[in-house]
Image 1 (tube, helix red, strand yellow):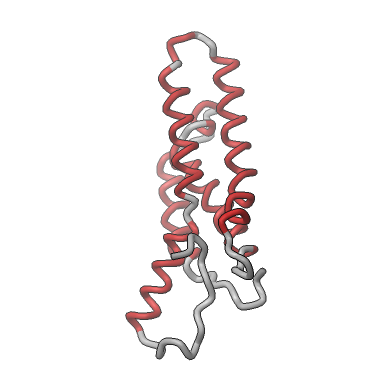
Image 2: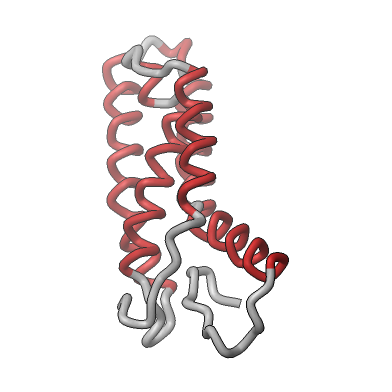
Length: 142
């Protein structure tokens, strides 16, 4: 099974509510860059553990660097895992936005700089989850 969202053939499966709902849920799941988020969460956990070390400026810089690295690596990663002729442009865009939404909800760099508002993050996550599944790649999305 591919890690990327793939276009579904209109003739392969007869249209139905359960099939459409299943495909929608699959898209929502595949757009979440779980591997990138796992790395980001791990780095944030390490940085949170060194809070007592008193290296706040360096620690804050590493928070920013880890966010930037994961943000840049998200579209690169989905380009690397794509099979030949598999659509990836939409995946790269939606997954990068997903990374930002999920990273915001994890706090990290946003908490360090006082930008994290938990209730707002929850709303972003709910709205993104509802909307992201609506984006299905077409055959020309390479």
